[in-house]
Amino acid sequence: MADYRSAPADGGHAVVLTNYEPKSLTFLNSWGTSWGNEGSFSIEDHTVLELDVETARMSFYDVFWVEGDLKDAEKKAFDIKVNKKLREEVNNHPGLRELEAHCPNCRHNSLIVDFRGDIRESALYARAGLEVTM
Image 1 (cartoon, rainbow, N blue to C red):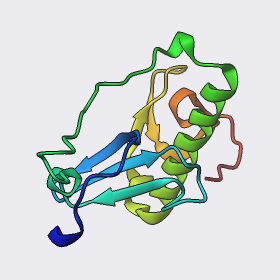
Image 2 (cartoon, rainbow, N blue to C red):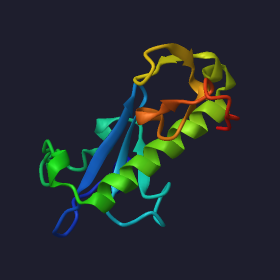
Image 3 (cartoon, rainbow, N blue to C red):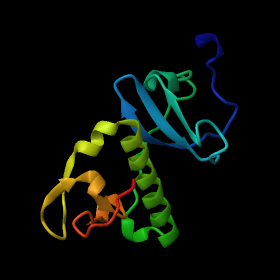
Image 4 (cartoon, helix red, strand yellow):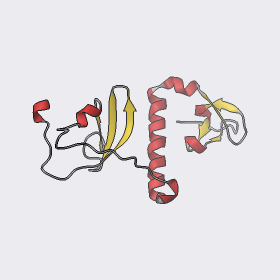
């Protein structure tokens, strides 16, 4: 692969680091969800990004968002994505259903599956005798 590493003629491209693991880094690309893995891609480590360090040195910047600066649609999209991911994790790892969480309303600990609504702002509802689905 080293033979194909060369600097681009001009320009550049920005991506955002969204996850890191001991053996990989995952980035969100700005080209939309139809590219890569729903807009993301993973690499083995930072050395993959180092093209020809003499002519194309990488630059890294800390980028962050202040929640107050986000549009309502952006906040909602984030909440939907987080809730979807949490549901997927519970479905992929059934043992999570046995974990307890502290209800902010009644202040009791109950099984996660006994909560309804947004998992981050849920209301315990098994105590009300309602059926729980997740």
